[in-house]
Length: 112
Length: 114
Image (cartoon, rainbow over all chains, first blue to last red; front, side, top):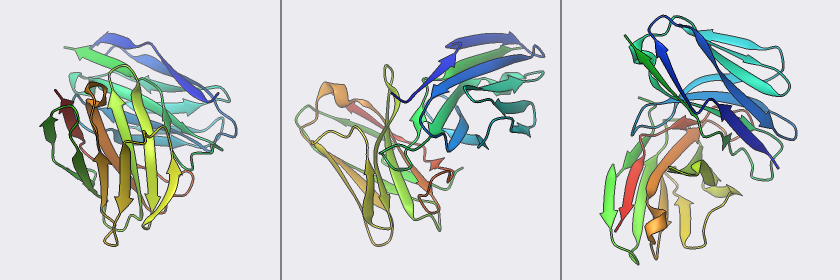
């Protein structure tokens, strides 16, 4: 069964304390892995797409990496405004077209 | 702002009722997706339309239906509502609806069934 597991469920950091979020997946024929950020009561905001193992993408304090079984979202020197839930999703050779399968997310809290 | 709009923002109704949620995709996007987000299940895919035609179905209940109109806006109809249907409903859109297209999400409609 295709699935996505994110860990930890919640993460508390001090401002400037770098860390990583994990997304492990099992999927037949991975076509893409997506990272989104979601603020409370709002829609997911697109961050990155990764297509193949070894690929890396960066945006400000965030860097996403991909292996054959998992992806990491590295947060360098986080600020309070980085507090949000980070969602990982995969797209593969599913019967359900181009639907995304989401993990349950990691809720990040950054305190000053 | 993703460019995807959804109305209404909040909806409160009673069990057994029927509601319609509306979504307008980003300008130029042909494909629309509907997702349901509940606290215990996370984001779950419901259904996808591409240029007016149904493209894929997820775990959508028979009480739920959707359509995409010629102007590409989409509506999700939920009927015979139950308490368990209370959730956030998101619409997303993408350019072509092909694999690996980025899906951009709207702000969501919060449905509360009392």
